[in-house]
Image (cartoon, rainbow, N blue to C red; front, side, top):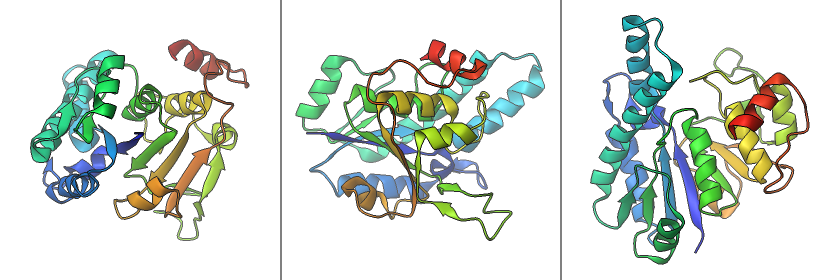
Length: 251
């Protein structure tokens, strides 16, 4: 049985107004996977507000704090969210604090549990990047990224005439995506995009939970489909520039 990779944005799972876990959205995730026991889900949570706040405090305490230390704050923040989700799921799930081994992947796909929670476990990459790694690890065709409205022709918060881009290729996205900066705010960051493109995966960006089932089944959904890589396991990225060299090195 194939698994579905669900990357759920931290902005959905942690309420920035109250600075507590978002009960409504966590329940929506749990209710959805519990109502689809016949399916297998790999949930990759993001860090969201709690990660951002703790990162800013760390920078104020130590202006010279390095990126690895900030990444570890993000990893621990995500683990709080992951543990909360796991407790809410009760039985029939796994929570991994490491990259799954081959045997763990096989056991999950053949076993009774229908959910495995795989939070990012190493510094140097975003939770989006980790979700792509999970897609490769579990041999799926793509990632459903929940918590992003999609790609638009301009910022929809500033321009009411901004139009949703329903479909875009990795080549088209790579022409407009900015160079990667740690903890950058972009729907799908350059490193995650490069790895998905290289691996021949698609990514579907959805704002909320109402369209998850449509996205899983290949039906129309409100969001953006990114697809059209160079094929699985091709190791080169065609355009040569400094940032691409860095991406190849890191991947």
